[in-house]
Image 1 (spheres, rainbow, N blue to C red):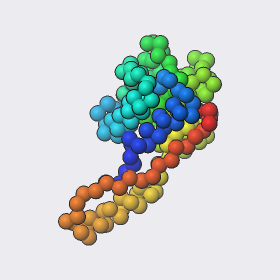
Image 2: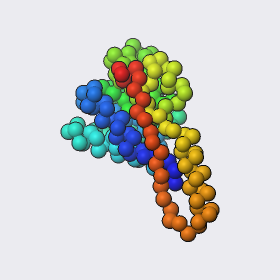
Image 3: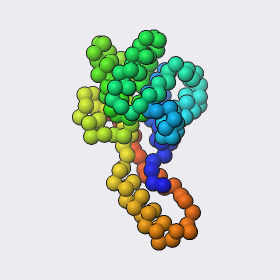
Image 4: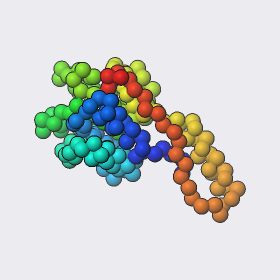
Length: 178
């Protein structure tokens, strides 16, 4: 398996918000509750909060889909419960961008009032206003690694299954005041 370490990558994002920005309330906007990548990202979110003594509040977690519209639905959920945070940690960029639009429509400013970060470092994240803090995934390297693993498996079918993680980078931009 060639992929990325969803846990360590999300851990880096959440820790940055707590350490660099002194965030005390962070809402998680994730993908499908049963998605393996979402489970790992959410676990990292929960573990980092615990590590820094921030109470875990299940009402601050929204799992739905990776679709754009889930950003607005998450915002409505949090707003109705009066749970707007210091920062929204989103499981992908499109959800994060939709959430920023919802915040702006109601008069909130990102990053002045609330920070928002995404995941995947989509092309749109770099020119969205404000430019979106995100996790960059090296897709070409991941593809190359997958092809090498496949070739190795074809040449030596008796080799054990293994996972190779591709490096990711935290890309700091305006949506978190960086």
